[in-house]
Image 1 (cartoon, rainbow over the protein chains, first blue to last red):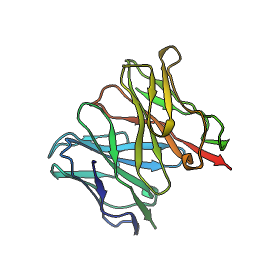
Image 2 (cartoon, rainbow over the protein chains, first blue to last red):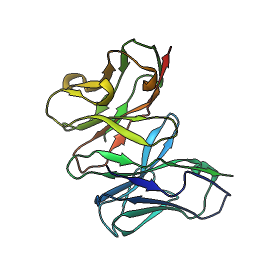
Image 3 (cartoon, each protein chain N blue to C red):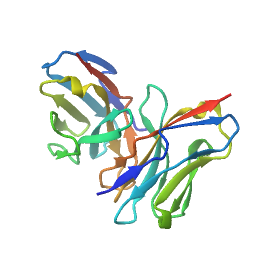
Image 4 (tube, chains in turn red, blue):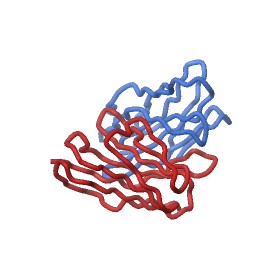
Length: 112
Length: 113
């Protein structure tokens, strides 16, 4: 089975802090995604990556950046956290040719 | 642009009753369609997917969905609800297996004993 591991399940940060959310997958999938989940809004795509060193903006990239130095690792960076970035963040990877997303358990970030 | 709507942010059913969760999509091309489930404090997992084969798709845990192109719908059903079905359900769409996936807002299912 595919395993997608997110480094932190719960984080509490202060406004202005730099935040790193890390995601590691063990199935050699090319494609990795970061979503944020908010009640009533579903999942919204922040950034995605089709290969190492490649990144594409999703629907809500403002205030975020990403890094993909190795195929198995995709990091989401909040350069200066703000209270409106309090949310659940979900990392996902896709199996080639099926479009099926495999998700990590999520990282719940609270920005005070 | 593609979009997904799910009618009803919250649905309650009695144990043993029919489960019907509604999903409508907008897409300019025949889409890939998915239903995902999220149990409390967990990530999402795939229930079932439609990829232009049979219009009636069977998934895990007794769920199934029917693709109706004329109605642009992909409603999720289960004949008899179990307590363990209580979760958040998301409908999703993508143009191809390589394209980004767009999610609906989700429907929270409660099962009453």
